[in-house]
Length: 187
Image (tube, rainbow, N blue to C red; front, top):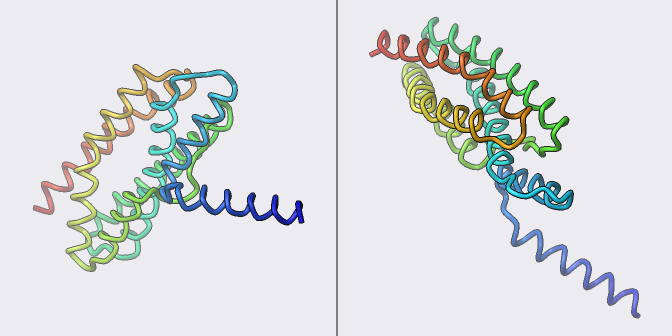
């Protein structure tokens, strides 16, 4: 009887924990990273943990959208850019996974909620509408990405993560230039 009661209480606690937790993979990864750091006595890691999780989800989104563009885009220039973005973001994601392993960050294995919505919105389009939505998304994200990478490169707590962000900045700026040039051609 006592064992049944304990199992019942444990199951109820598990259900309540699951029901209250977020289904956003970025938030889950951040929470897990922060808990690990706090358990090790390290405080103030929220910004680094958020950057790592968001960068991983963002790179996954870039790869998935790029793959969709390779299959769906009508413009050869969009397909060429997509190929470049897929290759470089896959490399960035691999490097980020190495940093995460070295520095004990938890990364999401699926897109965060916001990134999933962006993916759904863009891939619902076809033809030139897809091309335009894809390029518009890339343009919109470049400045935000660059600012976020600059912030972590300057203000991050973990040296490996700061170095990762610094290393990616020239590539992100190059992509920004390529995207802006393509946007001018398409418009």
